Structures are given as structure tokens and as C-alpha cells.
Image (cartoon, rainbow, N blue to C red):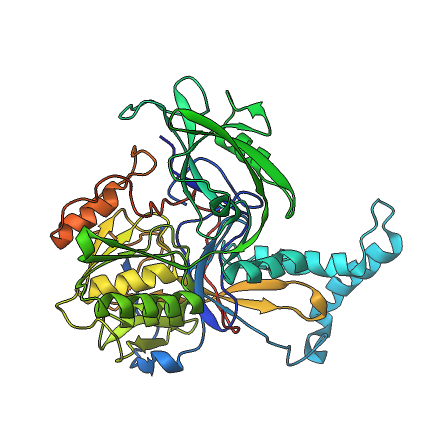
Length: 490
């Protein structure tokens, strides 16, 4: 069975002077990658040169950095901050005029003598030069974005998406079958894992477990997941009609594609009121605030067991990752940040956490799309012995980027400026975090969640009967991950 994928057209990322950590990639039906649902995320690092005593900075004073993973634009941000730097020496410095002479000579030559078509404008040439400089770094997390793409990235980091907003997967028609499903038909179907809360699909009544049998009146037999999602995608304000099989009935549902807010925290009460389930889809200001409110309510209701679901979490701002982890950790480092010189800065826990009492038991659900800022939170809880990680190895993004908007509306660049280390001083880049309890949803049918069941068992409660409260399946991982720090809050 293919892993589930989110159908939406937004890439998650966070701008501003904050670190973003990303994890699974969500593709809402419309302008992001949408396809078969596949999980869509250390080496000890020490300062180079002579040793330095790490500086400690309280979370409340730490600059805003973002760690996140972006799918539609093939971005994967581990940590990131949105910058607003202005060159201290605009133009070509006098001391470097001879070095820059070939650059300006080539631009002048193209503008005066190039006879091909189309003829590039000066803006075209400048943007191409910037793009080339970023590509010369051979760093998948450092890149240039055109103005529209850069602005869309900032929108995405804010937790918005465009499309109909569903998560889908290819699966065998017969429950329990091990049949591989590369396309629809021959015993395979396209099922809804879940509609995104508040999305057009959710408002239209789409339900987890629904099976899509036709789009716009056309049968889907023989089509791959990518081919089907291409049919479902479309511009904001346009509509698509899905033929849905629900049990023994087939109904037509018309959905208008739109921009919608993606709730960052989804909560459910499990185990007859004993367990609070909290799925956090992004790491940003909204997520940390919503998480604090939800946790306050859970503790007030007397619940002493927490399931923190970070599967598919592409990450976000470092300060917000610190805030969420600090709810359970009273003191000590949440992470270390190491700059280009090798100097390390300790980012300490905020001592005002709500659930630092060890009587509150915690498990964290993770998968290959738990990344960046989400990995910061998971690593802190695991390193301090505050929670067990349940699921699959995380993505493994341990670098931080800065998002720098360029003047004159020329887009922006994402530049790797640091790496982050766990409280134990481990750099997880390319390795990820290993779960304490291995579990997988591979082969599971839509509406079931074996990983959640394993988490409940670890807390001492029986598996959740019936459909899973929030599958939180992870979409396919992006082809290029990246982690950025930026100076603009989420």
C-alpha cells in the first residue's frame, strides 16, 4: 500500500528571525506535490578549533529561527529565520572592482550583443546570477526563489494551504491484502485518509475512509496517484466534483478549491477520558499557543497521559519548538546551536512549563517526515528522558537556514547559517532520531493507526477501537530538504 499524501497546494515553512524545523510533507490538493501517501523525517559535533564555553540563552530571549520542510516547492527546512539584511556596501566595493569586472562585462555583453530570443532583461540576468551563486554552494537547503515563490513560501509558513484539503492513499480493496497498488483498479482503490480540518473538503462533508471512484464524471481506473491528483488540483475559486463511495452508496460531492487555514493542533480524548491526544502539524507561533491552551485544558480535566503526535510535522520556528518542549522539561538545554565559526549557544528550557511534573506521562509519535523543528522538540523530550518516541526513524535535518528577502522585490534566498545539536550534543543530520518503540502504519488501511495503538500501549492503555482519531499520515518526503533561520515571526 502506498503511504498517504496530503492534497493541498501549500508548502509549510516559517519566515522571520526564527528557526524552523520540518517533517512530513503535506500536499493539499491543488498546488503541491500530491501522490501516493508515503511518509512525506547523530553524529556528535563539537566546535572546531579551540574549545569555547557554550553560552546559555533563555528561550524567551532567543532569536526567531525556523526549521521546516516544504513539499510543493521541493523545500525542506530544518531550521530557519527570515532576515531583512541590507548590504553594508551596496554595489561593487572599490576594493573588489577588478574582481567584479568580468561579471559586469558579461552582463553588458549580453545586453548589447545577444541576438537570441527571448532577450533577457537586466532583472533576469541579476536573478540568474543570484541563483547561480546559491547553486554553487552545493547545499540543498540554500537556494534562491523568484518573488512569487518566495512570497508563497512565507504564506505557507503561516499555516495556510490552497486546494480542497484531503489526505489520500492507494490501498487494496480487500482489507488485509498485501497487494501492491501502483494504480487504481485491479483490486486497488483511492481512499481518503482524512480531510484537513477546516478545509473545503471537510466543509463539504468528505470523511475518512471515503473512496474516490471518479473525478469530474471520469472513471479513475488505470490512473496513478499523481495522475488523479493532477485532475483534482486547480485554481482557487474553481470547483471539482468527486464521486465518493461510502459503504454501499455512491454520492457526488462538489468542492470549491480555496485558500484555508490549516489548524496546527488537533486534539482528541482517548481511553475513556484518560489520555489527551495532540497532533501538532507545524511548529510556529500559532502551534505553540494552541498547544499551551490544549495542554492547559487537558491538565485541568485531570488527564495525566499525553500522546504528542509529530508525524508529518515539517517543522517551523526554533523558539516555538523550545516552547512546546519546555512544557514538559523544567530546566537544562533544549538544543545547542552551532554557528559557522564553531561557537555553540545553549538554548535553555523555559522554566514555566505546564506539565513538568513527572506524574504526567508522555509519548511522542514520529515518522520519517518528522523533521527539523519537530525533531528539536522530539529530541529534547527523548534526551531528557521525559518521553518515549514511538514510530519510525525521523527525517534527520540538523541545519538551520536564514530566509533573506532581497530588495526591489527580487525574491529571496534561503541560506544555511548554523547547525543544531540535541541536548546530548548529537548532530542528527542525515541520521534522524531512532524511536524507543518501533511501530509503523505501513500496510494499514485508512482510518486505522497502529502507531497510535503502540503509543497507547506504552502509556498502559488498550489500543484505540475503531477508526483512528487523526491518522496524521505523512505525505511523500520532498526531494530537497532545508533548514533556515529568519527574522520575521510566524
